[in-house]
Image: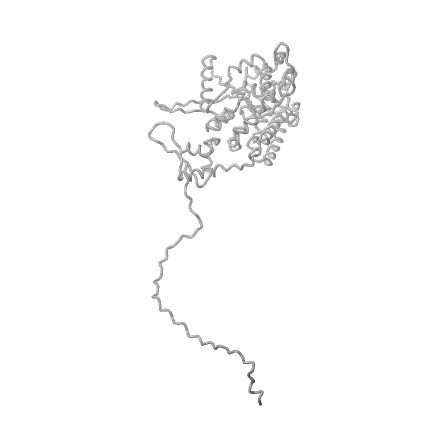
Length: 457
């Protein structure tokens, strides 16, 4: 997609070379292959490679966006796996998890992985790869389970995640102090627009992913032996060697002065871009600065370079700019139905009025539509002056039900009404007779033959 930017602008070091080596043998989009390599390789080096200075995670979460067949998303994934080489692909294959139905399932899976590796490998190793080629199930879960998105957000930030299960013998807490979770997914534009609305993106989950629009780069004729063109791809050794370099001993990544100068300029550019972007679009791209630092760190580490150069930052910024343009294009392609969506607060208020002013959370959720996450309903009620929500514990163990209600608001600046006693009514007087009117004289008609006396003198 040249209109989004050239692949040459974002190709850097070993990863750029790996994509170029693979392109004669694949129909995938080169930017899609690069996005796949960033996600897979960064998932493999989690906990070993961190951003300079801050020590924040450097993992990159990539999502390829494109229609079935024409997007060649599967081709891009297969090309990336082949470019990694058999040893690195085998390691990631053991860490691959294809589906999480809830936030609790994410915590449980990572905790079990740490426990299994502690027994088998002599020490816990919680590196995991959330890999799904059909993201619709993930989008549904994130919309229904308020904990799903928050746990993914904390995992991306490298913060501890936990889950509490209440049982007869008390509460059982499962905790992962340092989640190491990579993410790679495919999604169709129509599916994405159906499940992801601006109010969902406001939580910050989707700006932690880099969405990349992809399409086929070429068409390769079928071979007579029925084999895949990727069978002829001989993976380079640089990415495998870089993986061993990154994990064998501690690596301390650092910015060069040219990289710092580029980052400072980019930060101002990103701020100016957000100021001129509608909020419903800005929520998808507001972490462009953090994403650029992550991509630059991984591009440099994949080339076994601890010093991150300004040229590397420029390549990372080009890739992030491509992703930002991709998500803008996906959102802009939404069909215009002419239907006005009613604000959530108004829908909640109307449902509560119909129910007499109070509803249980599950009932209100059904009334306004299941597309809204439960956390958004609570936040909306907290922001509105005439609504509130509260937990009401019951005698039976289990979850505490939540109730929403309308609250009355005092009217300010309005004078109070006073009851004033009425004065006694005076007795009625008889009606006064109307004065006599003088009688009207009837004017006699003039006699035409009468002669005035004066004329006779």
